[in-house]
Image 1: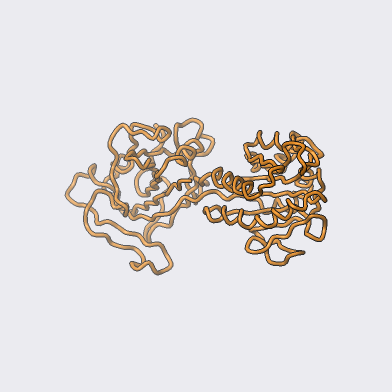
Image 2: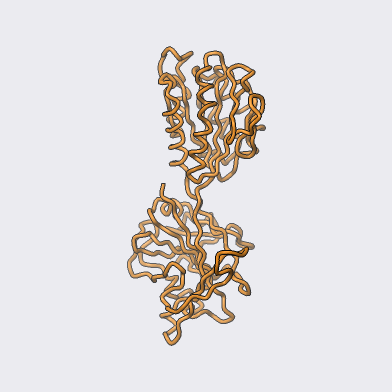
Length: 391
């Protein structure tokens, strides 16, 4: 999965209007091109900026902060301002900070049938859950794992060793916030109902902005239908609306099957998850497919913290602009809207998390979606010139 990077360019707020800013946002650095971000096309040349965000002006760099990478604060490089050119040909003097746009976190609920016929399956889950989690963590995703299952002294229970588990097996392995073991003996048909009935024990560790995944592992059919579970699960919290359901159940009456898991399979197909066949008994392939789905389905965050201006400078929320570089030579300025409610009325846009006291810049959903799939794309957040708004 390609990572989108965000270039945070903080422009020095001078005591007078910066060179190149006419008070109306008409400077070369922030003018929108004729195209839109949605199409990643431009109708005219965009301003070029170098890696340090110094613009077209030459000269040596002056540094704010430690020059050797030490110190407590970020290092800023300030390009020496140009002189002698008309204001419209100059860019605002700038300092810059590079940061990575990280993927959203992922919260995964495993519920494992602990009935007598699940000895092999319980052992496989116990042996492979660490590798599964490490694959996800290694991709850069902040993951929380919930396991609903009894411990080994209660039916075909499970206990997870470190690093996912806490190291107290066979009777204790919860390792918050990374891993939460809900001690519940799951019968052959109660996987879904046990998820609902234990919500008070696992829901506090689910994060509002995470991708949600439910994984059922059972050799039987459930005691409730797919529509009933789906409606009850969605009613637990509005942030569960886009959850993905996965199932490792029997697709036929094979030797491993107590019953075919048709309801599980149907919901998995409806929610776009992995529907693995327990009859294959190939748990390495199952967990590889699950980790690929979780990693590939995790969206990148489209909320950017507003960085602190350099010492002696101040932040003006009406002098912020957001530009998108598609990585192919096209740059597009994105206008600001007042709130998320106004996103539907523009092609592309962004807004503040709190207009009265902003701490983050948030991309409109359509802008976020398009930017996330752009290979080598980047976002430039520029401070110092009048904000561009929809025309």
